[in-house]
Length: 384
Ligand SMILES: Nc1nc2c(ncn2[C@@H]2O[C@H](COP(=O)(O)OP(=O)(O)OP(=O)(O)O)[C@@H](O)[C@H]2O)c(=O)[nH]1
Ligand SMILES: [Mg+2]
Image (cartoon, rainbow, N blue to C red; front, side):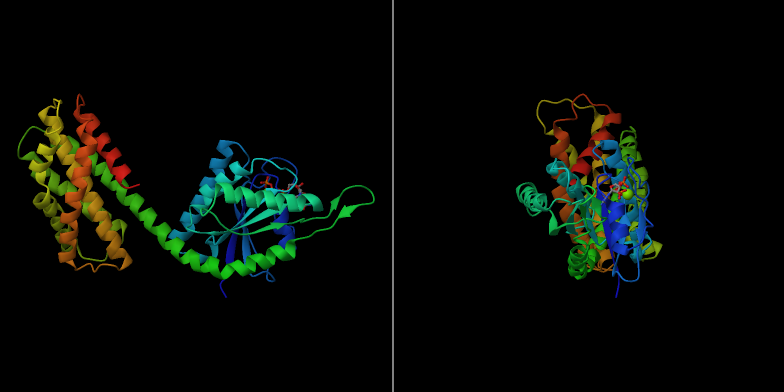
């Protein structure tokens, strides 16, 4: 059976690496007393255990440290998904909290929530490390359960809270706390694995879709800014002669981002269809009158033209990205031009109004250079 991978995260010094060593019964993960002992993410496994564990850098409380760790996790995820390297996918999380410190659980949970957002509904097991005190163990578990219920209801898929002692802990000459909770942790993890693997398939698709959409949006933002500059050129012919190739290039770029399989003339047909739909359903004139209709403002002609060119280009990008996304997911056939035409005309109609609303109040006193940025901001808001 496929092995699941557990991302082990938590503040520095909570005992993540010690826990991994104890579960796998080796001492390959480096542990220690200093700050940030584990610097790089690393994956561990042993034959006896049906899952792997990914050790991470501690989150600490500092923002910079948190960012570094979060970025490393994001990078790991992105790279493994891009390479389809399933042996490195992240399927569930052990979130480690130090059982000896009874502090800021809310802040910890916020961080956990941010990280877990990377994968839709990822199952989480909260591990209370260093749970040396039997009485505090129950208190801690109850406190965390309450904190999750209060702050994170429905937003974290927490499957269990498990207290562990990974290594014997010497209290005094006579008393040593023995390891405990490891079997329970392994058992709870095994219980969650089937669900984790199932959810991961959705999460990976979702993740890939977001990466592709991000790339498509970057292309659209760049083309939108170029379009405003072209739009501001005061020769009537400039518009279509320069804008259509720009928008067509944008659609090609987006199709490539989604890996749409169609020859160049096929993509060209789709590009023409999207651009034409814009003209048919909205058109520069409609946009112009929409923008001019905002009362009490006085906008230069070149600014207006720039706004129209940029808006249409932003919508072309947005519509093309959705079309390619649906083709990529198999929802729509790459040959279904009728559907694309209808969809594009509909979207243009809807979206143009949003852009006019967004721009209306803000064009006053703006120069051509500001317009691109303004439109890109509206585009980003609409795509959030
Ligand atoms: N006795 C005992 N010591 C523990 C236990 N868990 C962690 N420690 C000690 O706590 C310290 C930190 O443990 P690490 O496993 O290095 O902590 P970490 O979370 O990996 O820390 P970073 O890599 O810095 O993020 C070490 O000195 C461990 O020996 C435990 O269950 N028992
Ligand atoms: Mg470590």
